[in-house]
Image (cartoon, rainbow, N blue to C red; front, side, top):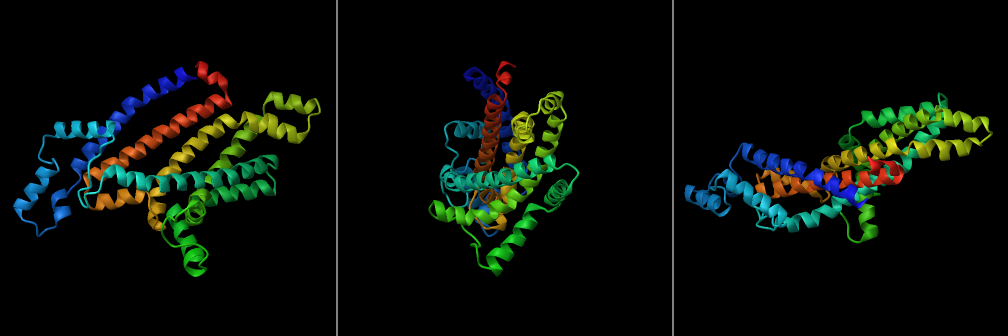
Length: 311
């Protein structure tokens, strides 16, 4: 297993380097002068020139890129151009809120989606199956930011059951603050996971070994869970990985809708202010989280099907 993970880590190095290069170039292509964005239109040419010199914006691009990569390697991403705060400190403050939103949303989505998919497969072409498919279509059709706004207006503003902003303090309070935002993302994920579970389970239940188990008199519950769901785990694991990546990216809009701290909200504010250091640091963190999720999926593949480690 160690060799397998080492090979996967080596495979991620070119991807990470390409992400760093693309992020760096994208920041330089963006229209607008970061010095003007920070100091304002009333700043003098001397003040603008001094700011560019202090931030290293006058250095050649290749030198700026080397400094950027060196900072990523040494966990020194510089300071924010707008408020002077350490970028790593900003990331460490906001990152836990994004992670907890992603994890809670995935837990709720999986806890709802898998049973819905199993129920649909068990009662194929009957009322529960039709209801599950209608639920999936509804989940695909409603944009998460729109659903989030509806939930916020209904349960936070009108009924007052949930807070309208912030991330909370302490475990219980943070779960209270994150629930409505996580439920928004979980609705879409449950629709996807439910549909995937149904499809994968029906495919497995059509196999010859399932027919053989039925012919031998195995109970339907045993066939459904031990033979069916167990062998449907591999494609389901792939779907869970993709769903987690989509949840991570979807957290950007949800953090804005619910006005809660997080890497996504930090990035949007930094983009509006042309804050190169914060934008680069935030995107790098997102890229590393994607790499970590892919490695986690590789580990789950080994657990689900040990033959993969021999590939």
